[in-house]
Image (cartoon, rainbow, N blue to C red; front, top):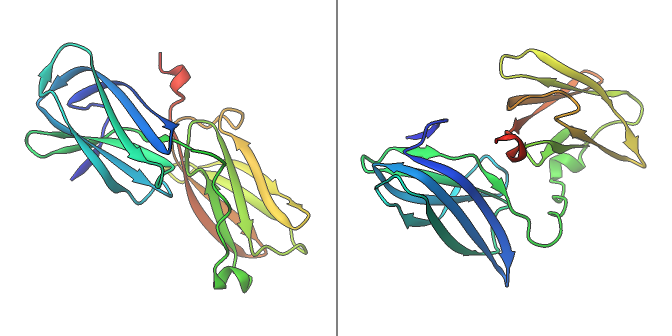
Length: 210
């Protein structure tokens, strides 16, 4: 069982990754540990499906600052997270980070359904602390399109138009400017009776954690 919790057996004070010589070098530190067995590092291409990347043995019990390191090839991501595993086998997930090595990920090649005109939307990246972009395909230039952002309770927070630029439907947003606090949101795109949804997760801005 995987728990997303504000309390962890390990009090993690930092978690980061940097690209160097074809590898990603991860670093994290704990200020306190209670009954920890190991840290499991996981990677994801979309922020939803996660795969095991490796493990590092934990201290068990500690009241001192401990630094950890892990090195992995640059062939996954760009989303990475730590899972703290205690000695009872319980797993606790720490908020994910984004590590981009080189250029921003290329646009996904449209599937056959997308080529046939089916409405498709994607949020890039699906997890962010502020900036994100909404991209859409299969929209008609003959009808207006609008974006609705709903919170976890289904309450409407934002309604904005989506405009085509030379046949490309996309728009960049700032969670701060939209006054969207940390949480999980549903992005709903409407055009001519068609509706498509995608998920967005707003994480706490690391610069505001202090």
